[in-house]
Image (cartoon, rainbow, N blue to C red; front, side, top):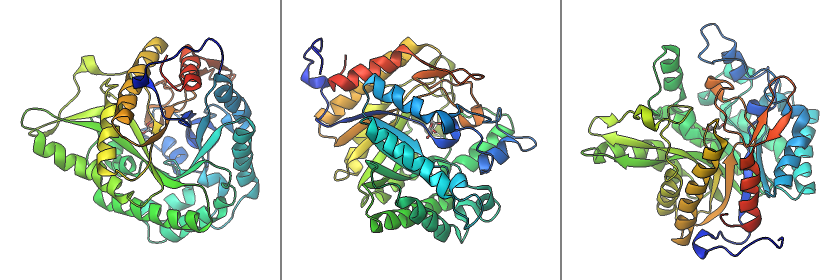
Length: 400
Ligand code: FCB
C-alpha cells in the first residue's frame, strides 16, 4: 500500500484476498500453433476465419515479458491456458519439454507474486483428435483423461485449475461456424447443440476426477455467461434459452470447487426468440451490445443458481480502439460486481480479458480487447492506460 491511496466507499470494496488479474489463451497469443484444429480450419479452403493466427503475439517466447507487465501493473493473478497439441503432438506421444514450458510459466507467476489460473482446454484440440472423433468421439473421454493425468503434475503450484473453457459456447459453435461461412451476421449466440453440451460436460467430469485424484488446486470450469433480458412477451423464450445455454451448465458445476464466469454482454428475447442488437448499441466486435451492467446481473443469477459454489469472473472486457471507453466500461462493470458482492454473491476474483490485443478466433486480429497493444511485426508490447488503471484498482482493492 502506498501513501497516495485514499479511503474508498465501502460499496466499492472487494473482499480481502480478492484476485485481480488478466487473461490470455494459448492459441490466441503463443503463435505457431500449427498442430491444432484451429490452425487447420484457419487454412482450409473457404475458411470462416478472417486470417491465420500465424505468430499471434509470440508469447511462446515472450511470456516472461507478459508476466512482467501483469505484475508490474500491480495485478496479482494471471490466467493462461495449456496447448494440448504441443503437449501431445501425436496420439499417446507426450512432450516433456512442452509441459516444462508451462511449468516454467507457473513458476514465473509465483516468482512475481502472481496467482496462476491455468485452463487445460481453451477451445483448441490436437489435429489427430479432430480427425478421430473430436469432442464427441467415443475415445475422447479416455484420451482427455490421459492428457489431464500427464499435465496434473505440473499444476501443483497453480492457484486454480479450469478444465474446459466455455463448453456452453463451444456447443454453439458448429452453428456459428456455418452462419459465418454463409456470410450472415451473427446476431447472438444460438442455442447449444445438446449432444455436444453433454459430451463436453462428461469430459469436464473425467478431467475433474483425474485432477482431484492428483490433488491439484481447486478445480472448476469456466462458462460464458450473459444477462438474459425478456422484452415484451419474451419471458418464456428467455427462460427456455437460459436453461439450455446457462442453467444446465451451472447446475453441472454444483459439486465443483469453483466456477468461472465470462461475461461480455446481454441477450434480449422477444416472443420469437433472440432479438437482434440495434446497430447503435454494437461494440466494435462480435456485434455485441455494449452492456457493462451484464456483469453484475449475470453474477447475481449464477449466485442464485449456485449459492454454495465460489464464483470467479475469469473474463470480462470490451473490444474497442478507444481505451478510455475500456476504462469506463470496466469501471461500470466492476460497480455492478461490487454491488452483487455486497448483496451476498461469493465472488473470489476478477480477471480481465485480455492482457494483449490478440487473435480473436474467426475475427482475426481486428478486435482489440487488450490492456496492452502488440506490434504485429516486432511483437513490441505497449501498455495502454487501462492496464495501469486496472492495476490501481487491484492495489486499492477498490474502484478508483
Ligand atoms: C471468450 C473466449 C476468449 C475470447 C473472448 C473475447 O468467449 O473465451 O478466448 O475470445 O471471448
